[in-house]
Image (cartoon, rainbow, N blue to C red; front, side, top):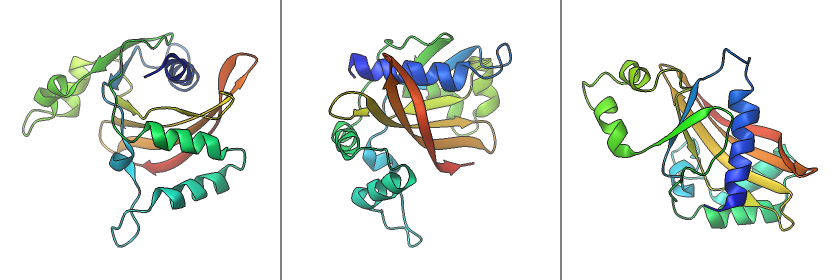
Length: 180
């Protein structure tokens, strides 16, 4: 992942996760080390068939007319394959990047699942997964996907549109794709 991608994700983490009720938010953020690829999250229609990216992109542009086609094109290109996250984020709250081997003993059959997870990662928001970040041609708009899984019926997946204003990234809109 590139430095600009880490800047966008760090700004989002501070705006979305750590800014929640100071003192009442998470004390650490837990992030899965591998990004989602497009194949992981393509939507399905009522008959279970995958919805083509072009239709999903058209739907996203209808939900936010400021979402630029160049941003979506770069996003699609960047997310053809998963990538590894390095410890290059800089949110104001501590974070850990975890891998499948660390999670396997927690989420294996008969292992305890979420109570065991929160014992291992106390004060966390759950398990966060990101896609790669796509940018428009002048680098002032960013677009990515995240999901956050947590205990019980707690989880969400959203696309995020961010804009760069006076050198700082800010959330323009989040588009909810699923909620549990």
